[in-house]
Length: 110
Image (cartoon, rainbow, N blue to C red; front, side, top):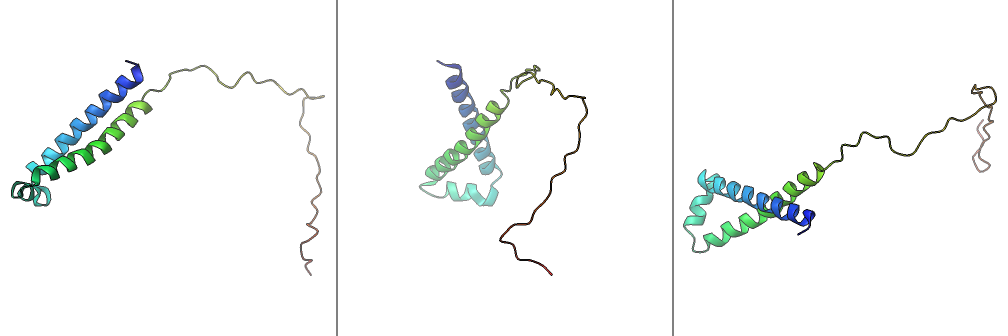
């Protein structure tokens, strides 16, 4: 199996595991009376499944994004080619006068 696919599956599984812990804590601490709503409904298991899947998609995406962003290269080599010096006749920079002219279609002031 390619390394990238293995990395993706591993971090998606980690994300869904974190989502499971998150949903478990939501139910354990009875946030927004969620445990009562789930336990007193005949379709409560479906609500927990949908909550876990929705949070799992979010947490898996974040987990994989963090893993990909941490895959940086530690290259300290210079990039972009070699820079060449600009040769000037005397080695000094000289200012150049440029005249600014108004636009021909601009209204005249005054």
